[in-house]
Image 1 (tube, protein in one colour):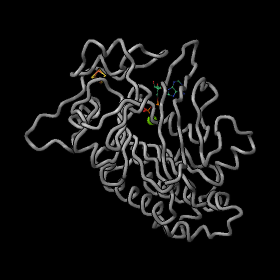
Image 2 (cartoon, helix red, strand yellow):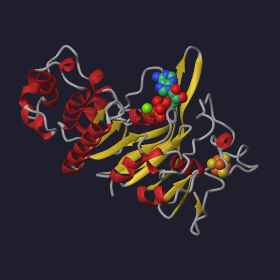
Image 3 (cartoon, rainbow, N blue to C red):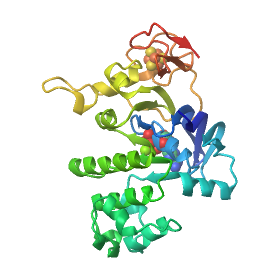
Image 4 (cartoon, rainbow, N blue to C red):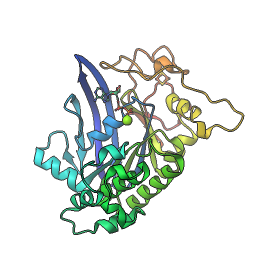
Length: 318
Ligand SMILES: Nc1ncnc2c1ncn2[C@@H]1O[C@H](COP(=O)(O)OP(=O)(O)O)[C@@H](O)[C@H]1O
Ligand code: SF4
Ligand SMILES: [Mg+2]
């Protein structure tokens, strides 16, 4: 497995109105070529910030005082503007949450597709056909199509250059459930055909379970548990992963009570002294609030917790 994306101990802070919000607090993630990885966690856990980091697409109010990001071994945070522009154009693609907002309202779909395809010689109608849209859509403006059609167009544009890495940030949050499944199937099918690595930022644990080989669970700007999806979902080891699963309506059997996670995710101003989940954690012990958990790895899983839900015999500190 070659390393396509490496995020190493990144801190990202937003400065707004004299206030600093720490969105990433030492986030680390390694993704190999061709993998499908789901990033899950409640709103505010840092998923979008992490996704934008891959293309250095953070707003100007954001700074990264610590850590590094590599795509194809290239240091994304330090690249000259022409180099990062080339990397974005040739290797990366993003599918946003709001497809209509991401399209240019003043240009017909056909014109936008031709711009996306510039230099490839590819046919816009063929691209639309890949996402099951007819050629008549080429003549329409974004306001003339539905949200589901707009998201198909956004997927077509993202995949036009067969990117190495596709970051899809809750791409179906605004769509109804049937359309959602269709779009996700298209996206993952095209990615598999092109060998594109997918980073799917999502609230949908079940969907990640069905479509991603690996899952990374984010909380408080760090990845608190990461590993093969089937293992993590079947036997979560971080108390936060366990709580997220217990709060997932799709996984709760009829007649059983849905557990919500009491409290709200933190908004960090700097580095907290101990575990950032301590205030909400049922497994908390005395050391949790005082000592910051460090990454441990065991059995293909990484974990940030002093007292995992189940112990692993091979566990080692890293
Ligand atoms: N542009 C921004 N300006 C200020 N704070 C931001 C901005 N974007 C995100 N944040 C804050 O950073 C934290 C992480 O947000 P985000 O990366 O959007 O997480 P998620 O995608 O998991 O909801 C949150 O506390 C959020 O309010
Ligand atoms: S370190 Fe402690 S507070 Fe944090 S998740 Fe683990 S048990 Fe809970
Ligand atoms: Mg987000």
